[in-house]
Length: 167
Image (cartoon, rainbow, N blue to C red; front, top):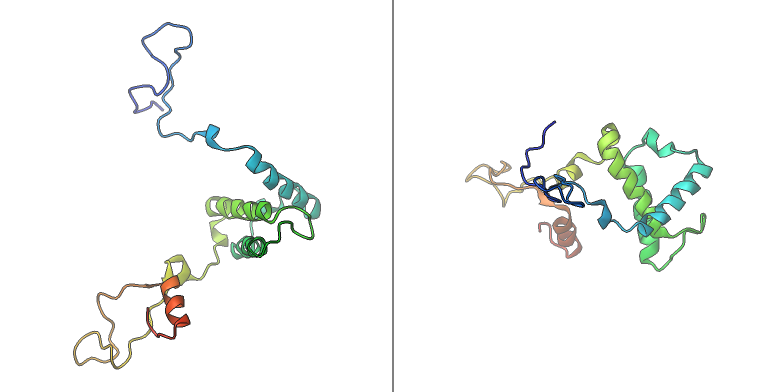
């Protein structure tokens, strides 16, 4: 498939000089930006999982909330100051990275495993039902307002924590 890019990002098409080979790389992933040492810990966790379960077991897929919950447990342990997972003796951050990788893979190859609550996928909780003070339209208690926007999870939780019924 021919590239739509007309000017190479590297080299010169019109030159015969040594080292002037041309490439149309605009918009392509720049792998050199990734620090390879960052993936070594994740690979150690994958090797541990291959012994515990089976090599590539995660590729079979699972409900998305399984790796999400594991990710969050590892992050909570790390936040409390626990550096190493007591079972594997590997860093919690490497376990978290591994679970995040699973979710990223599942997004593309196992979409049917998405078991998040529907309202969470939309980015918030459903609006609270209107009360008698919030009629939406004059004289019609309980009707929905046409301009109602979904409430965001954090704003909702913050309001509840401070004793307010609405953010």
